[in-house]
Image (cartoon, rainbow over all chains, first blue to last red; front, top):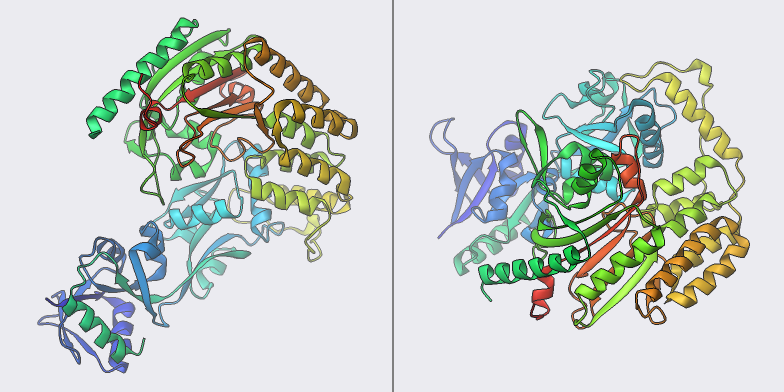
Length: 230
Length: 357
């Protein structure tokens, strides 16, 4: 029985993952045609390579369909309840870095912290008759963060893309979104709250606790960890 | 016991408990399993999404699987005219779990809700009826009173803004604590100089420069507000820390009321409630009172609160809880309001405690 390693199936995240393993003496290659989502592993025996959407990886790590997976720490925390009981972060990989942050319009000069956001939300609700809307696709991380910090009178509205534009379109008053440079936020007239960092995400090699870990897979993992130096 | 037997046992126990309440004149009512999410979200905020199942259809929009009965029963009652009434119900409630698989996500509740009447009498009646329904079990009852805490906050000698800010977070103990300390002059934030309200740019989105200017003005006012006096902060602390028998707490509250006269009315209400409990045969001498009781629950309680827990199984959730929710009838009453108090029992827990109906 081989050990199943899943990596992102496309884009920069895939390229960087190949580089990361390559730099550690393990070559990962797509098998056959460009369109095939299986791969070849050279440099260590007993590893089966699977390519899949990084967003679907938390589910398969949680259910144990794969032993190891490379994906962003943000999606794992968002999609897996008690994530640290379901997976173990084997190695942060040092790329794919992005911060999940709360951002508000730059013109809100009265709002710099979560305390301010809470106070502004209370006033906003009195004035407009509805709760202050925060657009996001990271519902759970955002809600837990705001509850932790005692922010009330807000509503989460779902936004699966172009989240920075929701404020201008008046479908939300603030956003909770991933940013790497802050460029898009600035371009849309938004700023990050000084204590608004929810999670600093990066690509991470995760180990599923639910996968079948037989003797062979454990031995392969040990070998792999030695080669990767983690 | 297999699952279906446990369910049947709980259901039979529920019917028997409901019988106790109907004998006391309560009218049986039903509530929908699917409730409009908007009402619950407006009441409890986004946090309820973590604790209730949300679903939707294209016509009605977001619906929630009934997380409790109080809200739909209050809505039904207020829509019908806010007259004095008493209701009982039994049925499943559903609670979404995000972290603890051992906590049930559906269970039966049997409830009693009293609208109108003398508040002290109604409080005592709900408590006594639930105590009676649970009588043979070894349970420990605890009471508390959110109304005293609210009155104390309203009595603080500080700005109305600060009092309102504290009241708004009374059900979030940690936030409340942090705020009280800040208003007491500890860890006051040093802000960069605030911009001139006349030079503000219109921000993107729905919140206008005018709203920003108004809040800047509020921040300025707040910066000029002197800290809440240390002895007043200490009084709130002593209220929250109260853990004694009800008569001892009443005596302590009388002392606190000398320095914080705003709580006197609420303390009188507690005294009247204890008298009414005595008149119903409750042993008040040994009844536990906790100053912070009921502050972390999802409910909307703003006065009397109570709970009954197993003495032998402290690991179980309280088998019965309840309280007064006058403000909720106002919020849901569309211009009408009526004092109201209620409580629920979890028959499934009674069965697990090994009680036979």
